[in-house]
Image (cartoon, rainbow, N blue to C red; front, side, top):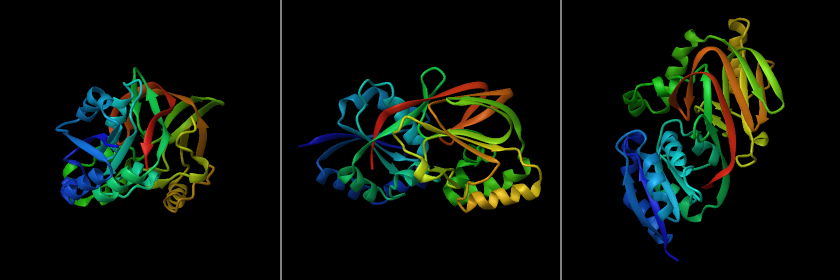
Amino acid sequence: MEKKLMLIVNPAAGRGGYKVNFAEALHTLDLGGYRTTLFFTSGRGEATEFAARHAGNFDTVACIGGDGTLSEVLAGLMQLDSPPPVGYMPMGTANDVATTLGLPKNDTVGAARRIVHGTAHPFDVGGFGDDKYFAYIAAFGAFTEVSYATPQEAKKQLGEAAYLLGAVKSLSTLKSRHVTVEYDDGCIDGEFLYGSMSNSYSVAGLIDLPRDEIKLGDGLHELVLVKKLPNAAAMATLAAKVLSHDLSSEYIIIKHTKKARFIFDEPETWTFDGENGGAHSDICFENCPQAITLIY
């Protein structure tokens, strides 16, 4: 049976890599029973507009781009009463969602095959503010500025190396901030270098959260906090453990929660799915359980 597929393409993502074997990818979708209609974005926010306006007329929605593109698409779908299943063809730099879902990166043909032959899974979306959403992570503090502060041209030329260079550069500017965090089971107050609410195994392509503790459609987000470190030696030890995928540390707190409220002494800059989310001194997050269905 023929199915209608809406394919939203961000031509700027992944150094324009979608062009490689693009015709073959479309042919793969065609052989899989999809009749594809293309929507090309030309600026930030357009993927959200496209999804909100047109997705209800399709059986499946897919996007080619980075995690930011997918985030925009999901934000648009959250405006619909019954959003269609979503396929993802990762063509970005860090590709945290692709890592989490086990999708082929920068390979439109392989990703097209996954849309055709994959299985639909429920996926929790993060909500905050007045009907605003994030796909997989909201974060503040150490290294969170790297993804949006790294120049676009550097991302195009260096790919993931651009993020690593940015992370190293930011080591000299690490600072803690006083935060009160209210969550389902209690309240945490202290000085923290980093904090996040996430529904992902991978963060910025640098940190891996424990897969056996995370379920993407369980109605819970992961609250992660990194405490202020006493000295440079402790910082070096912690960095080495994190980069070796070991998060067992007295300085790292991980909680599973439906809601979390972050209260700061002064406005703190946040990133949402790798994009600059502005400064907030009091912000609440809520899990939107199984709001979207992802194909992988």
